[in-house]
Image 1 (cartoon, helix red, strand yellow):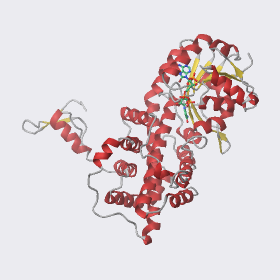
Image 2: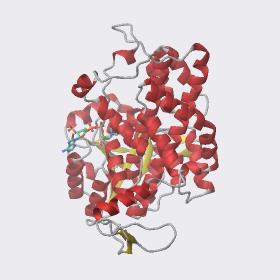
Image 3: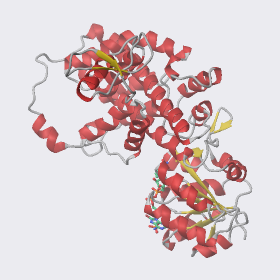
Image 4: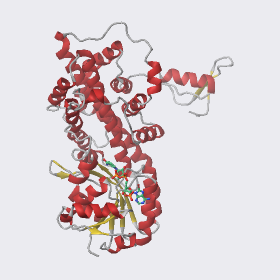
Length: 481
Ligand code: NBP
């Protein structure tokens, strides 16, 4: 046995992760892929990596020093189960199996429980950063046992991205905690992307600026508080000219956004936890709306506003600044909601999650990396049990500074007939959560009327019901919610 770490699954993510591991001091990497061609190709292309190839799972296990550590990077779902079953056959108690794919966290909880019964450790680790990150340094979100982390921690720290001197990996919590946090990361990513897209759309349709001109605006924004990987790549995409038509590339790309499901998982999970992640939900639904050409074709005939929307030259600068501030405020809401979901998930599943540590490991390697995450880390450092992230002084100030602009942008979008679901739902969330009183009181009244669901009063304890179909007097009732 000559390898200290192994990788199973050598498609783009696995081969890049294997190369990343091999490039670090002291690592010898065993590699295995179901079909041997991929193993051979990786050996041929990267002789410098010193990989130890295996043709069978048994050979793979034999090539690993004990306790064995292997990272699985295969297609999420049935393929992951197949590989786990095969590894369990050839591994021994004390060995560690890591699933680095995009698993749905309930699957990870199930797998961890099943594998633990064999004495083998199982760690579900979210890995973000795409193929580039896998090769040069991803952000890694491992769950699993404390015992596994002792062995795995140093290895993962050696391959993770570095942000401000710290590796972008931390032990998130037990069993499915890592994949849960990776899921919410992706949900936040959906919201961030949709907000940027809405900002672009408003500026383009309001001012008539070209994609290349808007690219310059985003590049400028990237020097300030919005600085982030997603803003940076947005400028790159908007600058790109299509070789075959000479048009801006963004104008020839079909306007139907795809999704691999992690946004939907984030929203489904939030619904069952009762956490309003409205920004992420709207971003996910916006992709769905875009991807129904048959509906859009018939709905295209529905009327919009009578007047055409144009921002005058003299108002252009203010309008763009308004959009920037609306984007920043909505982004704060989206992150606040995402962290709320992690907090609720931790409570539900019994994970001891350090929210500040999560914001730190997202500063590098992953798709939502941004300066902004330092502010989130500061907020949780000051108040670890902060109930609503956006109420931290730094964010509350930013929202106060941006809210007039934010409101103008949402009004403008509505009047102009430009969809801005993430901007407007974020603003509604902000106004909802800060409201003294909500019309939920009326909803409770309605529920009591048709279903005797009862209500509580503001002026005395107890649970009450009005005899709606009788004489409409109020009685004390059992609490049925
Ligand atoms: P894919 O998701 O395309 O999976 C291909 C790999 O799965 C191949 O190695 C294939 O082997 C293997 N595989 C399959 Br399919 N069924 C198998 C089975 N029954 N037994 C053993 N191996 C099997 O690869 P990828 O795009 O590199 O992604 C790997 C993982 O990383 C996925 O879970 C994905 O969701 C995740 N991912 C993450 C990011 C990110 O940014 N974090 C990006 C992309 C992907 P074969 O060669 O024999 O067919």
